[in-house]
Image (cartoon, rainbow, N blue to C red):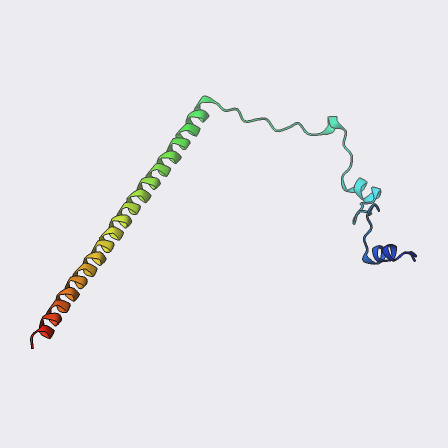
Length: 122
């Protein structure tokens, strides 16, 4: 047991700075050798042949890209139209509410005017 108070607290807290920790799992040399046998570089299979991009394939890819762009443009146009309709509807609703407020305020002013006139007449 360490003699100083600091050494005791460090030892008890489990703080082991500077001490190399062993890895949690180290595969044994026997298990790794049996799991993946070492192959010489010459015995490895050749890489699969790369697919050549031929002119017909280029046209096919270009047509697919154009079709994808057309679909994206159509979707964007549809979304813009929907947004425009929603905006117009919102503006209409706001205008109707504003008109109703103004009408109610006008009616309240007329009623107040009539009430004052009745109060003035003895």
